Length: 179
Image (cartoon, rainbow, N blue to C red; front, side, top):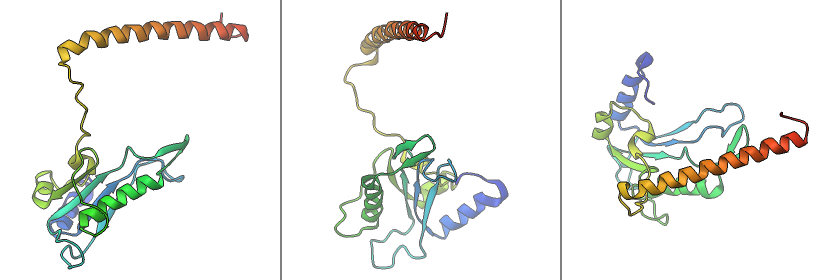
């Protein structure tokens, strides 16, 4: 998706210029028992203006779902049915299908990128590059006012951590471990 080894950059450039990539969905790692690496789904089409859906020529949808899913055990993660529906509905709404809602870009999750924007990024097809970061809720207070409160909170948490460590070591002695 971003490598330029073995002519991969030229291949990506060619498929973007040929307008073949409809959607790219980055999924989290550990979805498959055979590999822990994250995967990316590529949806390709020969015609983005086939009359069935809205005209999507020179557009590609990027969805970053890497933060989705729940860890089932130490080596496996599952996407819930709601998460799968959310991803699916986003794609179908973007294509302009009826009865699935209206598409809108969501920072940190999805973005409709124009071909010239992809070209400006060097034809890199990593969804995270396009969707950006999630919107962070404004806490309302300027940093210089909130920082002293954060330092006080950190000090309290460090004291609590020290007390918990002492309790754990004391409990270990009861079981014959430790000094």
